[in-house]
Length: 156
Image 1 (cartoon, rainbow, N blue to C red):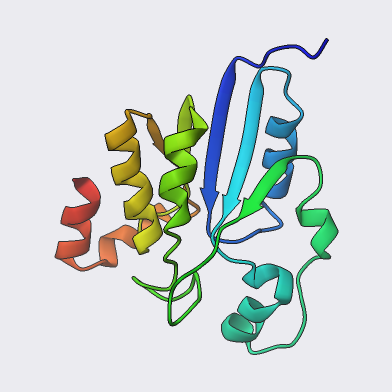
Image 2 (image 1 turned 30 degrees about the vertical axis):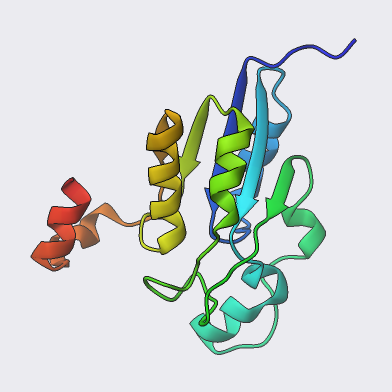
C-alpha cells in the first residue's frame, strides 16, 4: 500500500531551469510531499531563451535531466508574444486556474509575479483559499534601482 502524503504542493515555474531541478527532485522524492511543477513555457528545453539572452545557439542542459525525478505538467501559453522573458504578457496560461481549482493543494509556490499567469495564480489562490508562497531568484540588491511604482506594487 502506498503511503499517504501529508502535503500537496504545486510550484508554478516559468520554464525548466537547471538550478531548480535538484530542489524539485528532492521535494518530489519526499514521503511527505505530493509535488507537481507546472511549467508555463518550454523555452529552456528548446534553447530559445539562450538565443534571446546570450545570442548563442544551443541549450544549457539536456531535456531529460531537467524533468527527471518529479511530477510536472506543461501549460498551454496563449500569449501572442510567447516568452517568459517578455513582461507582462509573455506568459498567459489560463489553464492554471482549473489546475488550482481541482488540485486541492495545501500550498502553491509562485516563482515570479511579473506575467499575467502569476496574477491568475494569485487570484485563483484567493478564490479557492490556497496559501501562496513566493520563491524568486531576483537579486535583492537590484531593488533599490527599480522605479518607485514597481517597488510600491511589490510591497503590496
